[in-house]
Length: 565
Image (tube, rainbow, N blue to C red):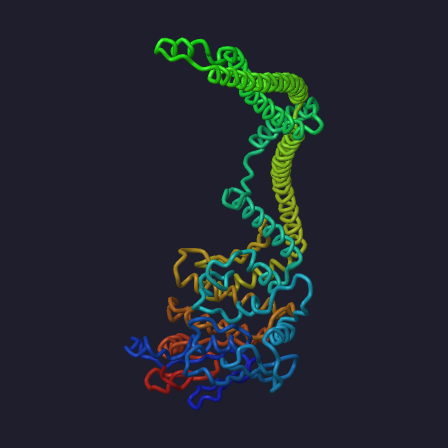
């Protein structure tokens, strides 16, 4: 039970609560004044402040994010573990909260409240404290009134089910198993989407395409294996190749040298043949002198003889030199030709060796290529195995999902009396408001996705009917959870819930809440505009309620926080 909501702000509108129906009234004109859009009275802030003191976060758009409230301190007194205790929090220090002046970190604080209000002990498949609290203080700004089973916009059924199963005293372990299967299926779908993205390098392809690629690579590998098996590696292939190149170079050098020395030998032979004609003609000189009437003395004749002898000596020496040089060149020619013949035989042998097999480098390249093929085969076979595993996982998940649906169905059958009480309670609430004009039921169905809660009120699905359906659902939930020891003894609603409901239905809902609180030991707190309350009181003048606080739009300090911002 809640007792008091307070703050150190001088103009804060302190709220005092009692058991039963508590109303926080906003004194407003029936037609909102211009200032309303920029200075709200504080009805929604009232609910959000209670939620803040019960462990909620302060997200963007929260009133406590305003600089005017940054240093304000707030307190809420309520029953915790059977006795009144005061919670304190400030937007200035969101990571901490106080309980009767003792500070604790927010995570520990939430665990403390979870145990005190919902009996949570932090074990196994329990839902989180905040997921449960969200049903008791729905946040209209987050879409909390869009659906009875959702506390925020587009909430997944898998996220809502643990809390709903706990509050309605169903099997949370079964819900956890269903959620596990659902998460596995979701992850599998995400992996499939990722596997189709070639950028990630994970493109799997179809099983038939993978089989075709695997068979093609296996054939290619067999060809390479046979080529390797038939390959003959020549020892020192690279060395033989270098030797063959060197022998060829030497053969070219010898051939060039032979050309030169053979040409020199021919020149010497020619010189030797001309050596005989190189002696001087002494008779020619004598004839010339006689013709000119000159008679050579004996001394000149003797000199001619000496010159001739000298010249013969030179010619003889030159001939011997040419003959020696010619013989040397012939020997060089013979030696080169013998070496050329040997080199030619050596090159022929090397070429025979090289042509008989392949190089080690070539063999290594074949090995590398087969390793590449093996790697490609390994990758394809892994992908093929993954496709098989995914297919098997799909079948396993479908089987597991069907088994869980059967277990949930069996569980609901075993709890049929409990389910009937829940449905009867919800239907009785709707009957109080609509009579037999709109038949109502809250059914809990067994689905592969878990328990499916279906609150219905017959007739047209108008906004006013949807608001009443959610009101009945929450009241039924609060009663069921309290009876099972799974929930607190209070429930809080923002006035937005019944915005589209006429005065008679508003009066009926408030009277139903008051009566249910008396019967079940509950406390119901709601905000409402004054003119809406006046209309409801005209319908139900004897409405039993407590005015817990009053706000007004007519003064700058009339809102919840007592300040204009």
